[in-house]
Image 1 (cartoon, rainbow, N blue to C red):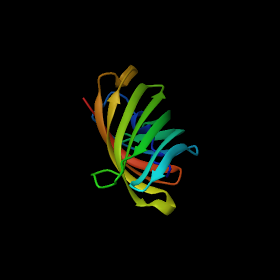
Image 2 (image 1 turned 90 degrees about the vertical axis):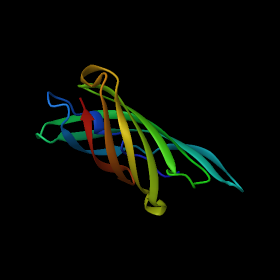
Image 3 (image 1 turned 180 degrees about the vertical axis):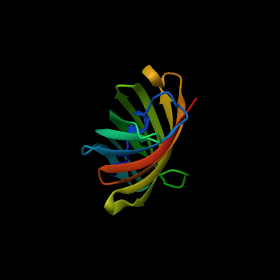
Image 4 (image 1 turned 60 degrees about the vertical axis):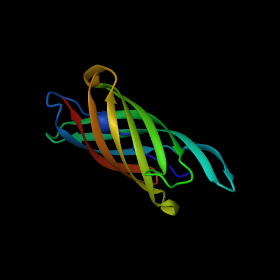
Length: 149
């Protein structure tokens, strides 16, 4: 399976007093551990991986986080997303979860795009929700997002 979401997403490593502020992020991930099977009806695969992210808020504030992710393919690939993923992240600002739906753009290059949500679990993120977009290729991802008040 393709490295689904290098994004793990610093997505949430951005906090501060302006919670509704937008942000961009870059992240890298380790090679995923994959599992699954191929049948005449298609393949079912899953992956697990870790990584690190750097977030830059609209005001220039920079923060870092680490993450752990899991994903699964969604055969027969005729639904809105080919892959679904969930990542838990942690940084100095607190803990968060990213959930996303992704579509493959170029399987050979390990390229995909995703949209998803953010759930704050502790620290400055506790009780917050947000959204993000992600573009991944190989072990690197970039994206944008926003936490809501």
